[in-house]
Each structure stands twice: as C-alpha cells, then as structure tokens.
Length: 166
Ligand code: 6OG
Image (spheres, rainbow, N blue to C red):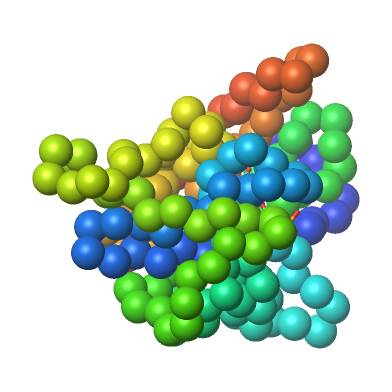
C-alpha cells in the first residue's frame, strides 16, 4: 500500500484493425522514445472521452468512435501523485493518419509476424507494464490494472496486477 494525495488524469487511445494496432513513437516529452497509444492530460472541464478524442486528433490527425477499454492506476514510491490512465479503443477511424511534432504513428501486427510485412509489437520500446494489458485491449476484453513503481536510479521496477473485467 502506498498513500497518494492527488491524482493526475491521462488518456491513451488505440486503433485496432485487421490484426494490427496503431501506436505512436513519442518524439518528445514524458515517455519519449517509447511507443504508446495517443493521449495526454485531461484538461480542466473536459471529460475523459473529450480529452481522448482531442489528443488522438492532435497527435495522429484522426478521429474515431472511441470506446472505453480499461482503467489503469500507477503509483510511485515517494511520489504523492497517482496517475490514472483511462484507455480507449476503436476499430475504425476517419481522417488521414499523420506524423506530428510529438508522435510518429506506425502500425504493428498483433498476430504471428510471418503473414505480414508489419512489425511485431515493440515491447522493448514500450512501458514495461503494457505487455500485460495489451492482449486484453487487442481482444476487446475490458480490463483494470495497477502498478506500484519503485524507483532506484534510472531503473523502475513494479509490483503489478491486471485482470479482465466482464
Ligand atoms: P503527455 O505528457 O504527452 O501524456 N502514460 C503512460 N502510458 C503507459 N502505457 N504506461 C505508463 O506508465 C504511462 N504513464 C503515462 C499517458 C503522457 C502520455 O503517456 C501516458 C499519456 O497518454 C507505466 O501529455
């Protein structure tokens, strides 16, 4: 158990289509040089969904009928701020996927890599916790998860748990 005083609210959105998932390579800011869904901070007066749609448009140039897919809570030892991230997904989108100053969008294969020209998921360049819930996201199974991070030097380790919810 770790106490936290305040929460910060974030969104993350993924397009899942034809056995592929759209990820963005983050070029700057928090989590740079990692692949992630498209998302960011929920601003004052916005709902989670509004924030998720805004960030998807800002970072990938598209809009999509996003549906809520899961909820994550991250705590870090010594930091009194908890991160709550609401995850969204869609199986279609409109607009033209475009690279932005912040993100470079790329499709990755969710299935066996043999049948496509698309790369497999870049787990070595993603947040370490993503591998636990991405299969749930891909299959459309809703999920919740929590990770308690310990930070020593540059290395984050985590106790984590996740499960699908009906
Ligand atoms: P900006 O700073 O760009 O928003 N984020 C995480 N995503 C994953 N998968 N795992 C984490 O921790 C994360 N911590 C933060 C939320 C930051 C973006 O990074 C996401 C936002 O989409 C293990 O505004």
